[in-house]
Image (cartoon, rainbow, N blue to C red; front, top):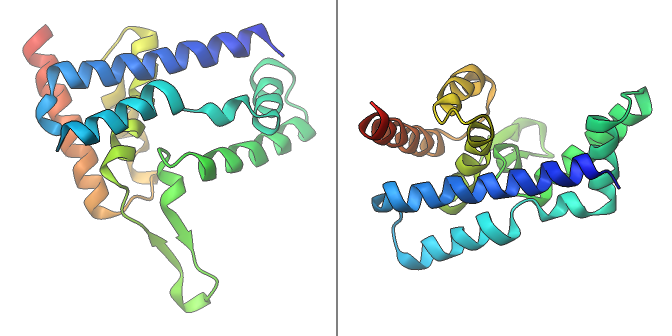
Length: 173
């Protein structure tokens, strides 16, 4: 167990909660219902990234970020990351279906609203850590073209990001 990695997880989860709380306070209209908001609150405050505490993920992440990056460490991290995205639907990679049939190819599934919000809070947590709440927009612009996301999910993500930027401009501009 690494104290540094433990601290990272605690801080990350706290910042995901801050991001969610900000959305609730400043953009309450994005939530379709109180029931949905309560579900997302549970995801962001209680359930978020719990799989990082499993032995398979914890040890691999800890070694990768706070140990040495030997070949074995990197391979173990890749397996842990794959496990993480499959256990955590707030990652866009979770919603890519690779079909068995060659002619069916890859499908980009629609990401449910609750996971879109959790994903945005996950991304935004790093802006909260750096204390630059605008950082998410540059990060998204840099990564947008490599993210394989269903068109309707992308529109929803970008609509929420635009609303966030507008509200931040209203508050800080």
